[in-house]
Length: 181
Image 1 (spheres, helix red, strand yellow):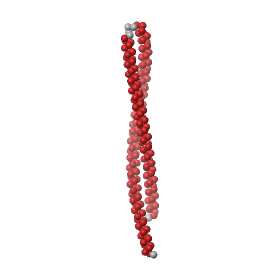
Image 2 (cartoon, rainbow, N blue to C red):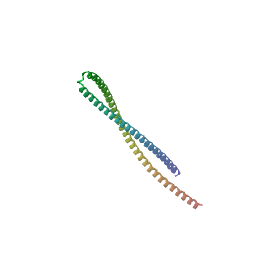
Image 3 (cartoon, helix red, strand yellow):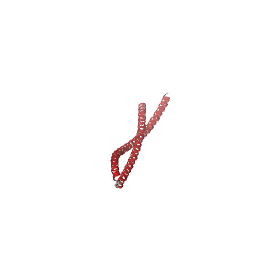
Image 4 (cartoon, one colour):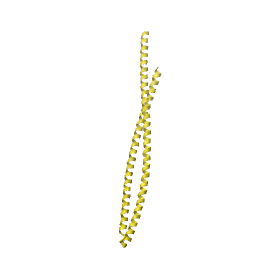
C-alpha cells in the first residue's frame, strides 16, 4: 500500500515536471510568435518604404518625360533660329541622352525594387505560414496541457482516495490492536 502511494507520489511529481516543461515551452512559443510578428511588421514597413520610393521614382520619370516633351516642343519652335538651333540642338541632344541614361537607371532601379518587393512578399508569406504553424503547435500544446491537467486532477483524486483508504485501514488496525490489548 505504501509502495503504491510512493509510486503515485512519484508519478505526480513527474506530471508536475512535465506540466512545468510544457508551460515553459508554451512561453517560448509565445515569445517566438511575438518575435516573428515584429519581424513581419519590420518587413511590412520596409515594403511600404520601397513602395513609396518606387512611386517617387515613377513621378520623377514622369517629370523627366514631361521635360523631354517640353524640350522637344522647344526644339520644334526654335527651328527658325538657324544659328541658335544648332547650339540648342546639340545641348538638347546631350540633355536627352542624360535623361535617357537617368530613365534607364530609374527603370533598372524600379526593376530591382519590384524584385525586392517580390522577395519581401514571399518572406511575408513564409512568415505568415510559420505563424500559422506556430499557432497550430500552440493549440496542440494547450490541448496537451489540458490533458495533463485532467490527468493531474485524476491522480490527485486517486491519491486522496488512497490516502483516505490508508487512514481508514490505519484506524481499523488501531481499533483491532486496542481490542487485542
